Amino acid sequence: MTSSKIERITVKASGVYDVLVGRGLLSECGSYVKEVSQAEKIGLITDDNVNALYGDAVQKSLESAGFSVCRFVFPHGEQSKNTDTLVKIWNFLCENSFSRSDCLAALGGGVTGDMTGFAAATYLRGMDFVQIPTTLLAQVDSSVGGKTAVDLAGGKNLVGAFKQPKLVLCDIDALDTLPDEFFTDGMGEVVKHGMIKSAKLFELLEKYDLKTLRENKDVLEDVIARNVAIKRDVVQADEFDTGERMKLNFGHTLGHSIEQYYNYTGITHGQAVAAGMKMITGIAERHMLAEKGTCERLAKCLDGYGLNVSVEPTPEQLGSACLNDKKRFGDTINVIVCCDVGASMIKKMPVESFFAMLSEASE
Ligand code: GLY
Image (tube, rainbow, N blue to C red):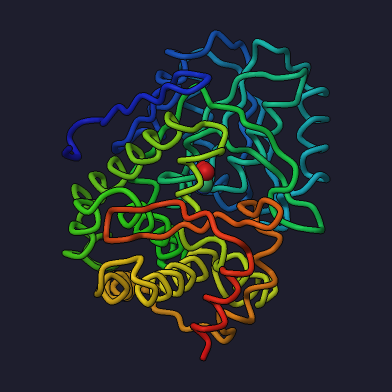
């Protein structure tokens, strides 16, 4: 995997599509989209930040490939990922006479991808869309696998659909403009993928840190392609999240509770997941469910990428918020545990036993 070639990773789910990882893909996107779409019109959906950086280049490439392009720009940030913006996108598609054979393109991070995907899943009961992710988090995680959603006042991603894209274009060059803070945020999921599925990826991450990984584009490209391949394998095994895919939630049960404790301000998703992964791995080691030293290795790797947060709430304090977790089924909860670097399992346990473990860890 080198920067001179484009890595093509094929996902075989309810839809079959390629994820391309490489450099210079944004300015060539039109010809790649042409390979997968007969659309006359593309609805280019993006936020104001990404639009200022890449909107014109992407529109130009799509137009050069023969598409007519209508652009919809919304204010950046999670606060836009709601039904108000979704209704605006639906109305924009209606006003511009989009048909079922036309296509949407999500240009941006996870918010843009999730919302565009959900609009594509629902407008005219479904139309095609492609993902052009410009953040690390979106490239390694949210653009692949077909989860789409918007938030409600009561919680994140509460209304959504599974809708696989027709194509995903991960342009490594787009990460050049990503501030360190957002790069670090995405590294939480990158380290998670290594922990749950690939000791090799984890060992590679251990050799670098935030600065050196960002500087070394060949390695970064390799890291992203490995992450996409892991995500592909998991999605192919369990597209609709009833088994294997739950492993992607390693660190997220406690992580979500941490985000909730801080009211989603002052802590990023990546930092909360990093803290959640460390907490659950420490607990797993204590209960002989994980090899000794796993937690120390995880913490050291996270430190290198700026994810060395210590959080205020004790595991016990986080317990009750975990009851809203999607992995709870009645009186039992599926806890994702890494028994070693690169090896994970889904441990089904009574909620009471999970609480007991958390409170013991708080002593
Ligand atoms: N990001 C978790 C999943 O795709 O299942």
